[in-house]
Every structure is written in C-alpha cells, then in structure tokens.
Length: 368
Ligand SMILES: NC(=O)c1ccc[n+]([C@@H]2O[C@H](COP(=O)([O-])OP(=O)(O)OC[C@H]3O[C@@H](n4cnc5c(N)ncnc54)[C@H](OP(=O)(O)O)[C@@H]3O)[C@@H](O)[C@H]2O)c1
Image (cartoon, rainbow, N blue to C red; front, side, top):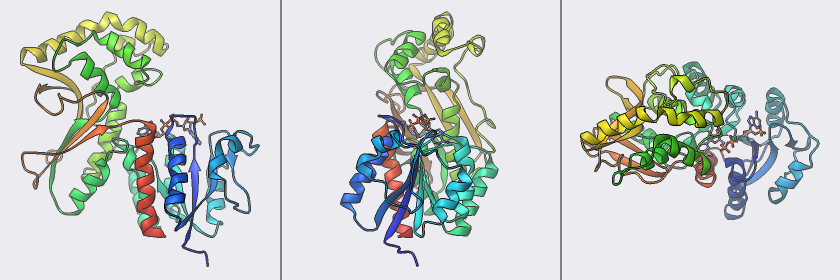
C-alpha cells in the first residue's frame, strides 16, 4: 500500500519569470525544506510544449526545473494519459494547474473522479458553465479528492475562504460588492482620484498598458469579462445558480466602434476620440461630490449580479482604494451595516502563488 507520508505533485505550466507557475515552484521548494513531512515529490511538470517526468516516477529536482525543462525532449502528455500516469504512481497526487486553459479546466472532473486533488488560480473551471461547476464538486465528493481555488478571485487575498466560512458557519450573506480587477482599480484611481483631477481616459489606459497593468490588448480588461468570471464564482459560492459569466449585465468599457479594431495598438491609437464619453461620466459623478469606479456586486436576496460603473462618495472605502489594490466587502446578517472588508494586492505572481501554496497546505492537511 502506498505511503501517506509521500504526496506526489504534478504541475501544469511553468511559464517565464513573473508568472504564477514560477513563483509557485519557488514556494514549493521552500515548503519542502520547512515541512519535510509529508514528503512532497514533484513527478510531472509541463508547459504547453514541453514536459518533465519519468516512467518510474523519479523526483524532478525542484532546484533545477527551469534548465531541465528547457532541455527536455518530452512533449506534455495528453490529459487522459496524464490521468493514467498520475493514477499509477502509487501515492496520493495533487495537480497544480497554473494555466488559464479552458481545456485543462474542463478535465477537472476527470482528475477528481480519479482521486487526484486540484489546487489552482485558474478561473475557467469555476466560472464556466454551471454544469461544469456541478460536475467538479460532485466528482470531488464522490472520490474524496479535494479542490481549492482561492487565487481565482482576488489572487492571494482570502476572499473565497472567507466567503466559505461565512456560509458554512451559518451567517446570511446579503450582498457582496467590490473592485475585483487590479487593472480597473489602477485605471479609475488615476482617472478619477478622490483629490485632484486625474488624466484623460485614453492617456490613463495607455499608461496602464505601458506599466504592465493591462493585458497585451487592453480590451481584454476593459470588456469586464474577467470581473464577471470572479463574480460568477462568488455568486455560486453564496448559493446562486449563475449559469455563466455572460448571464447577467456586464458593462464593457470598449466603445462599440472600437470592438473590431484589428489590434490592441490600433485600439489605443483610436481611443482618444472617445474620451468625451468617459469625461461626461466622471463629471456627472463629480457634480454629486462622488467618484466613478468599476465594480461588481451580488445582491443575494434579489439574485442580482452586475458588473459596471457606479458612483461612490469620496469617503467610501471603494473610492479610497490605492494603486491597483482590490477591495471586497461582505455584507452579512452578523456583520450588520459595517461590512467585513478584505483589501490588498489582487494580482502579482508571488501573492497569487501564495494562495495556491496555501490551498496545497489545506489539501495536505486533509489527505496526508
Ligand atoms: N498573474 C496574476 O496576477 C494572477 C492573479 C490571479 C489569478 N491568476 C491566474 O493564474 C493563472 C496563471 O497566471 P499567469 O499570470 O501566470 O498566466 P499567464 O502568464 O497567462 O500564463 C499562463 C500560461 O499557461 C500556459 N498554458 C495554457 N494552456 C496550457 C496547457 N494546456 N498546458 C500547459 N500550459 C498551458 C501558457 O503557456 P504557453 O506559453 O506554454 O502556452 C501561459 O503562459 C491564470 O489562470 C490566471 O488567470 C493570475
């Protein structure tokens, strides 16, 4: 019988510097020194092009993964073969999915039904169809495998664990509201600051892109879908059967005329012509002594989920956010009119990987 003192780890994706995969690997290496039991053995790691593993399950050395992966001639195993490989290892296995791949997410029920636990910052599985959500949790409950995804909302901030605790201890969550995107936070904190005037919208978007706060094509942030995915996850955890991230109102900040721009660069070039619309929105808020912010909210009682622009008093915690921080407020029966607020960096390789490593520790405490 396999020893419960050894847990095998399989990691999908180890991208370049700064990515979550690389930061996670470094945290995993430190973990093996700090907590020698159970013994954590890396038996498989891959990018979309290359993989490292051996048919006799020899440990992949954690301090040498980068160069070993670069010189590997092995291709990644197709997912069904990977499941077979992990299943035959003889030890309990945790899969760490650091991709943003829908294909990998779609295979979670298969991994879980084979007893392979999952930790991941990938939003796709939990914000896709409601059927996939149900399949994931029913596979996990049947096999006893664990699935944790703290970093899929707010990176390393304890958003999901807090919501689960509120629900599991019998509190009544009435509303969840917040700024769920580091990019949107940065953009609106500079475009409509609580003091001073802020820059033109197009100039702020350009600056955010230059500073690396946006996706290569800023429209991937401005369409609101990333925030809608996070809201879908939280709404489902709060008990709402949200069908998909497109099944509720999501305000896109991409002008209709620029939806078809051929590239992110062309979009940025043409954006100044649409500054007037955003200036009007900002001025309307200012007239009421408020500032505009891009927020997501879930009204649990009325089952309303929405993502878009809202006005806030300058003294409101959402208005006073700094830099690219996220803020998430939980309004509950126990907390009354003063919400439980979680705030801090909602993006970045190290903090996101921290959420993944924290999830791994939770899984280990239950399966080892
Ligand atoms: N970075 C953050 O601040 C942050 C915060 C919260 C959550 N997250 C989530 O964390 C995950 C990783 O983030 P990241 O910033 O490191 O992402 P990223 O830079 O987009 O990297 C994801 C990598 O996944 C790889 N990939 C895609 N499909 C794959 C597959 N089937 N097999 C193996 N590799 C595959 C791609 O690498 P190839 O070049 O090999 O295609 C890509 O480089 C994402 O789900 C993201 O949404 C990130």
